[in-house]
Every structure is written in structure tokens, then in C-alpha cells.
Length: 190
Image 1 (cartoon, rainbow, N blue to C red):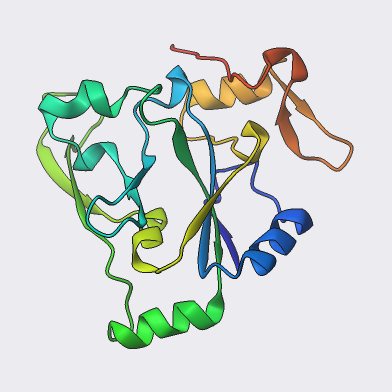
Image 2 (image 1 turned 90 degrees about the horizontal axis):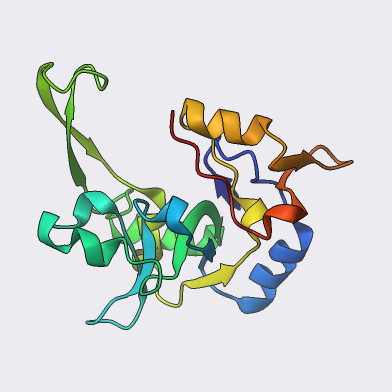
């Protein structure tokens, strides 16, 4: 099964990746891409020191004093594109083992009711990241994919970037980073 965020316009079914996933016999596979400065605040792939397996580290899980190291793109070189491949038999086994759920870590994010107004009522947002399931599957894998597999639209800045000449629309209607960008997305700050 292929799973992705709906806001990732680069997420498309890719038969070569499907074939690779099937041949790998991995129960779970995460598509990752090389991190750039534009990705330093997002989650990255890491190796669990206890189990040797893969895990996803999100900024909400990072203590304030470790933020600089967390954002070091030369140390943590890959990020989760939110494109995931899951073996349904393995997923069923996880559900059976954990009473119908996947034991994902819950992250706590301090926010305000109005995100544009830092003085508005403070709230806590509790969330999980589907990519964190990589740590629940023994033998899970990651595959490095081209940046074009990740084209998120979460902010006006993202939308402006995707509507700019930094991106192209292919003949099969995929949105890809223009070749002249050499794999580096633009950084837009309004």
C-alpha cells in the first residue's frame, strides 16, 4: 500500500518504487530525500541506538537545547517525504499485536489559538506522525528518492514556490523541481 500526505503534490504512484519495495521484502519503507536548509526544521531519519532500527525524529520531540544539532543538515542528511510503502500483512500483524492500533509516539506542540498572534490563548496540540511507524516494523527500510517526490503545499510561501518558475509541470502532469535548481528548492519568506 502506498500512503502519502494529500498536501504533497510530488507524491504519485511510482511502479519502479513499488517493484523495489516488493523485491526488498521490507514490511515498511519510507521515501527520504537529502535535506537542504529549507528542510532544517522538519523531521529527519535516524538510527535507534538501542535497537539499530530506523526511527523518525520530529522537531516537536527535540529539546530546545538540542535544536541547533537537530537542524544540522550535514549531520542529519535525510528527511521523511511522507511517502510511505506498507506491506498490508505486516500492518495487520502490528494491529493484532497492539489491539488494533500502531504505537506511535505522541508529540506535544505549544501553539496559540491564533497562530498569527503570539499573545492569543496558548494551547497544546497533540499529534502523531505516520512516518514514526517506521520504528514499529522490524526490518523497515528507507529509500533515497529525488527531491521531485516531495512538493508540499502547507503555507503561502510553499504555494508561491510551486507556482514560480522554480518548478515545472511534466507531460503526465506531475509537478517537479526545475532542472536549473539542481535539486535545491527555493526558500521564500514573506
